[in-house]
Amino acid sequence: MPIELELPKRLKRNRWKVKIQEKETREPPHVSILRKTKKWRINLRTGEFLDKAPKPSEVPDELLALIRNSETWRWLCEQWDRKYPGNPVAGNED
Amino acid sequence: MVAQNTILLMPRKGPAKRFARLRPRSVTSKAGLRASLPKAGKDTLWISDDPGQIAELLKSVKWPTRRLGDAILLFNPALEALTALRKCFDRIAFGAPGGFLPGEELAEALTAENRSELFIGGAVDHQCNMMTLWRGNLDSLVVPFTAFPPSGDGTAPNFDDFAVADYGQTVQLGKYEAATDAILYEFDPEYRRRKAKQRRASEQSLGASIRRLRKQRGLRREDFAPLAPKTIARIEQGKVAAIHDSTKAAIAKRLKVSPDELASY
Image (cartoon, rainbow over all chains, first blue to last red; front, side, top):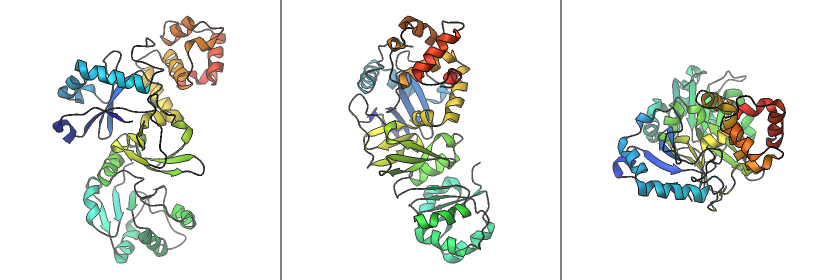
């Protein structure tokens, strides 16, 4: 089942998507932010961006606030844990 | 290199709007096709959804032909035509209708800086249980079905329902949405080396590589006996300044790679 966060229309119109994709077993628990051909990943354990490029500053504050909202964050963590029970957010392997 | 000269070989001019980013020239007639051939060269990208026009192209070129550039065929060409097409074009990507990104996304992916790290389309081979994925630079990647294990929540791939989405960042198999970068990481050693190099710049590379590879193999730190789980943890976390050769060899053996390859993962 695809995991995609419902976003406000303005962000959707600008082609932003927030997903937990399949086949991400090798990486720390994270959520993917997609816009057109670019992708940013946020570590669900630390809240930090996993990659230096593309520049994290390109992600709108509004979207980051939405993702980091405690209720959304909890939901994302739960979804990750369901998809990747062998690599849960609460694990301490990082 | 991004094509400088894109020709849309389609029966109607309408779809050209969707490919506007490529500033394409629409060719809809036999006369237009014949006029285009002398100007075509290695910087030309042909995009066609019409087997009839491609057949016309093959009939119109003078054999032996010179190279006409690259081609994206939004249909499966006849097997008998494939050799002739390969003589005409440097690189050809093809797949059943619906097997490629929608026009606007395709144009965006073909012109993206990271186009070689995006999938623009693909074709599924149910007989051999594998799929061919085309990248934005028209290179191909062959991936077996076994690369798509069901997720923990029970989401399983449906190979009858293939599509690429999200501007080439997702391979959709029904409700299963595989990340393009995860596929590239597993099946393209060059991509893996590039990513490892980027990671090395920012983290303890060998430990992180061991951790990633261990995850890929579905192993726990306890699975490295006689090495203690704590030892594996310390190595993965970059807390061991110099790993003894015998330890490295034991880890590599358990991970089924050579010790020299460990850091590339």
